[in-house]
Amino acid sequence: MELAVDKLDLFSCARILVVGDVMLDRYWMGDVNRISPEAPVPVVAVDQIDERLGGAGNVACNITALGGHCTLLGLVGDDAAGLKANAVANSSGIVSSLPPQSGVHTTVKLRILSRNQQLIRVDFEKDPGGQCLDRLHNCFAEQIEACDVVVFSDYGKGSLEHIEQLIQLARACGKPTLVDPKGKYFSRYRNSTMITPNLHEFESVVGATVDKDDIMSKAHVLIGECQVDKLLITLSDKGMMLVLSDGSGMHIPARSREVFDVSGAGDTVMAVIAMAMAVGMEDRQALEIANSAAGIVISKLGTATTSIDTLKEAMLRDYPSPMKQDDSRQERTG
Image (cartoon, rainbow, N blue to C red; front, top):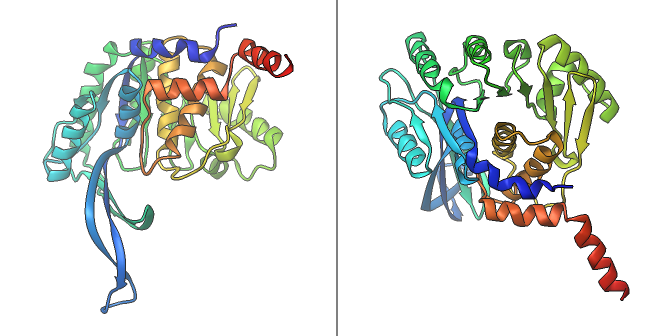
């Protein structure tokens, strides 16, 4: 039986269009050696600044880091943060469709850290106007034919206010659609191929769950209401559960990892699932790869990516070949 790790090189054929809320993640890092005389707060002597793409941008970065081809479509302003977001996208190998627009304020998340501990996060954001959304819709219509799969990354910042129209257009073009949802109204994602909430997001819609059977039951109801093909629920340290519209499902347990920072792990899962879908992988293989990839990025600081070589190593460790397992047992008993 062919292992999931044997299909990783197919990712280089994947063409993904990522659409959604693009952010700039800023990290200010330094030591704390004293408390401010003005207020009982730590004084951080910043000596390192890092800027990365967040939100939909992090999904795109994960795709290109794993060898896929990605076009990123979103809204940024003609401000310093917007220019930086475009620069980071270009340096990451992303085909950027982020024309800086007047009247748009680029979403920025500023995290201040000391010794790898986050002290505070400061958000700068403002909903875009309707005219900007019309431009995004037109650009989407121009880009849709060139991709294999569409990813909608919804962080509730306003870029996907009219996502229903975009999903309808993608379906008309025969393109599978994956949605990373936000909020309590999943009906806006009706007719998408797959929705990928985490457990908290899932329970905010269906109510509290008590076990895997309860999750499965409520997921089937939600699938019927939203008329989607699949629902992938990420369960943190419990792994992930895929539920299909035909009543079937599967659970992939999490692999043991040292957790450093879970921010962005959902973006990594979304990126892997999209590429796996683009190249025709089986569901279980896709979930195993996504599981290993998420395990890598949660051991890193902030929104992070992984390389294809690192992922291969993790896959061989997480899902070893049965033949190799038999060989190791023979060596121990020989």
